[in-house]
Structures are given as structure tokens and as C-alpha cells.
Length: 510
Image (cartoon, rainbow, N blue to C red; front, side, top):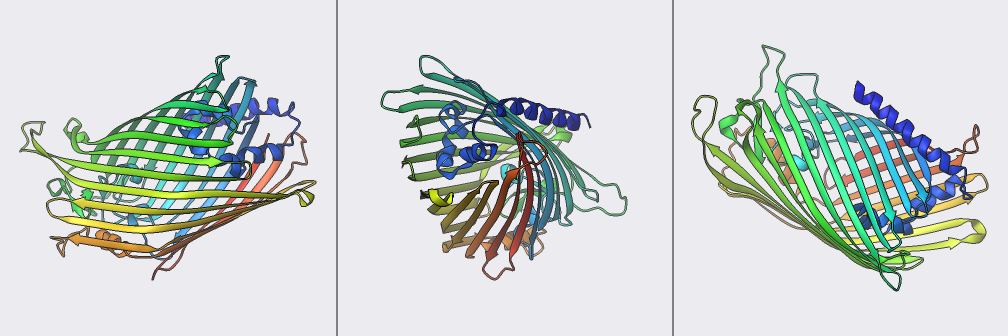
């Protein structure tokens, strides 16, 4: 309960900091918010998201927001049991950005989210994308509840030498649980730290360097309250494999993770010109058996390399993007118990995953000043390849797809507000695939999961998203503006019934 009070206190801090700054700005609150969110000012957003010092050169103005969100998602038939068939969540968040002076900037935020996921099977572990494939699983499934608290704070200063120093701290705490057997209780602590520097050069350009560090922990414990109903808990290791020695044996594990990385940046000071960015992050997550003095059971290591290069003008931009992400999974082997210890007798690197993405993205913007109308089109084209493999027995799953994306933003300003409509379509045609699943036993309890994955690997997909947002003055106070947004998303896979998501947002700008 104390963390909830702390969340509320943080929200109030964010609002009070931002409200003082709005009295001095000549731009309307609605225009200031759009200045930050405008697609042409977000095109190089990835750069300053990695390096906090680069925020000094992005579109900025003192502003604060608080918003309430609600979303529902439903699959007509299961697409990925490990993520659930449907969910609903609501959240409250507050963010502030304030110019302390011409050379100093501070920002912060806090949020709370409450989420219920239904139809979750073969997964009792939080943060699936980070932990997979080493999750705790059962075949019963059920509803999974989670509460998430997030806090953020950052500061930068621009020195007379044209050197800028920035830092940012993010913290996330999460608790996840079920109310029926088997009952997992997951406690997550996730701390991120970013440090960045940049140096202005002649002819409008700058260079920057950033550093990244993350410390991650998750306590994953499963209990049974009923003495009549028990089901085995499986320790999955990828592509339908599991640590059979520990089936139904250990119900408590801990995940300890650490990430570190660096990035280099080259960009124009006024966001008009050539830019380039590259970043590298190494992540290591150990799965440990809590009941045996936290000895390591598995280790997952990943290596992420990203790169971007492009050119941005006043009303158009283009960039090339690339990403390589490799994962390696190691299983530790132990002998017979000796007292309260398990002697380690070896290790095997059995699981591998390789993800590759290369693409091109563009932006074109036009304005009709007489009608206060603005239109932005953002096309993207990328090739994506995913390869998963497991040795002993030989199992492989590979697929290659194209992703053709088009995002359109239309904004109309009125005397009393603004209306913003966005529409996006993703066409994802299947290019090729291959699967090898040797020694797949008929009685394997995880077989339905791997069959689901094998079915999806050859499917074409179309996804769509649309949203409409209305910004208008708040009648009670001229220092506040109000916005509401309605959004819808759909996912359409060959021979699958569609999946749909709907959301509603109500927000205030100070």
C-alpha cells in the first residue's frame, strides 16, 4: 500500500512542477503539446531516447500532462497462449518537462497500471519477452493479474563550452499473481540508468555518446492451496523442450539480470540535416533455483546491435534502419543431491535465436495554412528474419517476412481546439519458412504450444490501427486544456479469426 501513496505523491509532484511554467509561455497548451508530438519532431526520437543529453536539441517546451487510460484486447482464437487470449487494463500517468533555464532541462514521470490477462497458458512468469524461453509453465492456465508502478526522472545541462551532460533514471516495480491453483506470485524490480554527453561542432552538427545500465530481478514462486488439485510445473527451455529432471519439483525460482551498453550519435543541432546512430546492448539473465541456495539453472544472454542513418529536411525525411539481436541459452547440469547442495557437473549451450531487421522509413508533411490543416505520411518497408534452434534433439523454426507499413496523420486546428486523426496499416506477407521438430513425443504436455508456433510461422498477416483525438480548452481553468482519444487496432492472420483492441484516454495538459 505504501508504494501506492508514493505513486500518488509522485503524480502530484509532476503536476505542481509543470503548472508553474505554463503561466509564462505564450503558446497555447494545445500547440505546445503538438510541438513535442509532431511527427517531424519525432523522426529522430530514437537518438535522444538512448542519449538523454540529446534532449537539449529536440523540440521542447515546459509542459505537464496527466492522463487516464483504459484498454481491452480480445483474440477470437488463441494466437500465443504464453501471452494470453484477452486482457483489459486501466492506468493513470503523469509526465512533466520543464526548462529551468536556457541551458537546463528537467523531466520526470510516474504511472500506475492494473491489468487482467485471460487465457494465459504455458507461462507463469512475468516479463515474458525478456525471460523467454525460460519460463515456469503449466497446462491449466487461467487469469493473471498484475499491478505495475513506474517512475522516471532526468536532468541535463548545456555548458558554455557547448558540451551537454544528461542523465536519466527509470524504475519499475511489478507484482503479478493468480487467484486459482497453480498460484504464481511474481515480484519484479527493474532499474535503468542512462548517461549521455554531446559536443556541438561547427556547421550545425554535434556528436554524442551515451551509456546504459540495467539491473533486473524477478522472484517467481508458485503455490497450491488445494490439497486435491495438483498439476506439474514445467521449466521450459525452448521449442517444446523442458528440464524434465525438475518437472513438478521446484516451484520457486529467481531471475537475476544485468544489461549494459553504449551508443554513438551524429546529428544536426536544429534537427535539419544528416544524422546517424548506433547502439549496442549486452544482457545476461540467470534463472536460479530458490530452494537450492539460488544455484543457476539456465542462463540467457543477448546481444543487440542497432543502427540508423538518414537525412531530415523541414517537411520531409528519410532513414535507413537495421537491427541484429542474438540470444544464447545455456542449461546447467547437476549431479545427485549432496545434503542441501547440488554439485555442478557441466553445462550445455543448446538454445539459439537470431533476429534480423533491415529497412527504410520516410516522412512527408504538408500544411494548408488557410485551413489550419496539416497532413503527414510516414511509409516504412522492412525485411525481417527470425531463426530459433535447439540442439539435442535437433529443432529449428525459421521465417522471413516483409513489413509494409503506412501511417497517416491528419490534424485540423480550430479556434477552440484541435482534432487529430491517425490511421496505420501493416501488411506482413510471408516470404519463406522452415521447421524441424525431431523427437516430438505424442504425450509431450508442451506439444500444443509448439504446434501453435509451427502453425503461425507460415501465415500472412495484416494489422490496422486508427485513433482520433480531440484537444479543447478546459472550461474550469484557462491554465488547463483537455484531450480525449479513442483508438482501435485489429490483427488479421490467414485462416484465423481477427483479434481486436480498443482504448479510451482522457487527459489534462498544464
